[in-house]
Image 1 (cartoon, rainbow, N blue to C red):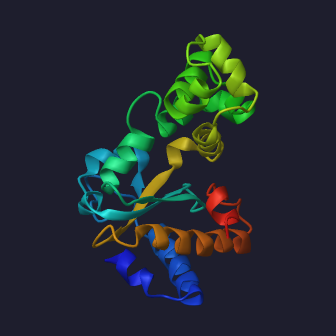
Image 2: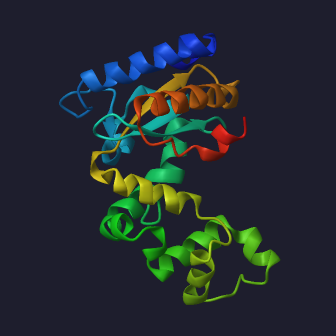
Length: 217
């Protein structure tokens, strides 16, 4: 599998291989029911595509319609389908759906323009410990939105939703780098993100959204 092959490559070899892979994806068609060989899957079609890779562990990449990579993540403790569904694609409060539903305001103002109930839901579900620790668990939506807009708690996925919106949410596609097992997926992610980050910089593209992982090294 692709991820297994990449594990054995050194940094220089992986850099070249990664760039060739992105080029091959862009030279090929988008996935559709009529073109199941496409390896770039429009985000709205991913969960219904039924592609074999979704059953595997491994990495996934989000990129724009013009081929600019935006994020690389991992599915280690769950399948790629489960990871993408739970974190990004399913439900009104998922990252991609927020980007789609509020695209205009995210593009013009940013994530702080999101409605109070969205910001409140996000804090309740993604920063529960922070709220409990600071006696904020019972605050109403309006009060929690004020907390969120102040930068307290966490706003990572909201900032990522803003980035996806600004890069044209309806053009974003997802591709997968499957592995034969869950072992070593975290190490592979770190390795690929560092190479992909350098690749974006060398191409003059915006930095990946994987800020923490890139900066940790």
